Length: 431
Image (cartoon, rainbow, N blue to C red; front, side, top):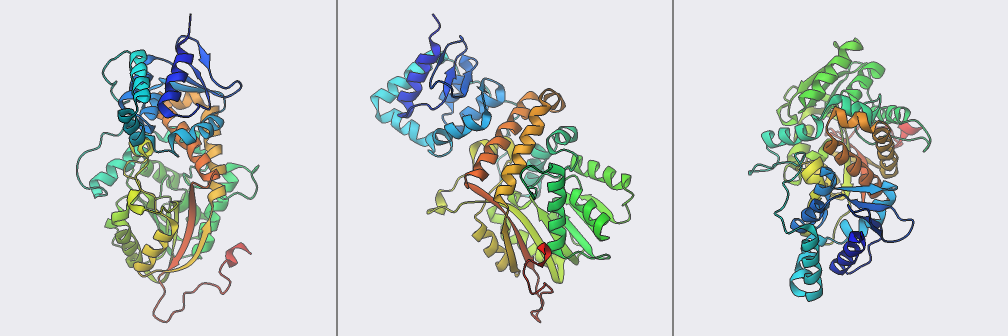
């Protein structure tokens, strides 16, 4: 008689000390759990071994990426129900501590081990980052981290991002608008905030597939230098530039922002790049960009932010994101970002939250991926496609629940005269 799911449900609840809010469907076809809830599909015993050998988020991520775990039902509902067990509790250390002290929990862990088969831990999926020892955010380590995230196939990103090929938060006029219109409006918003005019020079830091550079050159007649550490992005962006006949205005370089020395520029856009800089390097990043601007020049820094903690020393990078999505990426509170920009010499003139806009954007990206799921797996790998689906869906919920945010910060290298060059009305670009 198939009874693995009820046994598994009972053991997991003993181990966690709380009810499991989703159904469990086991490899023998048995099910247990709340009627009507999405089902966590445990496809084999290997999934349990991954969880036992690496309790918490990373073990779950490895099982998901390898295809040992799945979700039957709405992914967003399942993630929302399980958030309290995964992200909100910090179970990695606590479950182990409880297992050592509590005989009942220790017995439950033994029962899971018996159900899993008492075998060694499976190797991590090949999509997991194999980190080298050494300092973070060197030129070499940053290039390796960027390559892991962005060099997974331009044709894969075409599926996820759609024709705009913009990999950052869009700017929505209404929730039922098109992704392409919302991304165009975001690029327009950035250009307006920067006050771009024909003949000016723009540096686009982390230029991606060239969308911002192309928009600024085509619509505003500015000369643009776009820099990226991704060779695949640069190749794609250069082709787009050539196809649009904008090679006289746009130059795409494979270059670290720290190696750009041909300033001054009238404006700098940094859209979804600063999350890769790291806390140790952030002041250096801000000072480098400040030095590249002419007096009166503007910086538009578009960056994801986390909520501050009472004890900032306790902050740790998300295990799944660090291992599978953005290696070495770090999020900071918006107040920290503003402080660092000011320490570098900038005058911060405007801060705008786009948190709700990113939730809408991510849901559209997930929909694009799911609509062409079989093709997406062929264009990268089944494991990589599963990584992107999970991370984007979980991120959409994180933005919706205000666990993280995203902000555009407009900062100016104000000259000694104090005349910033901005209009008296701080947001005249929206009128």
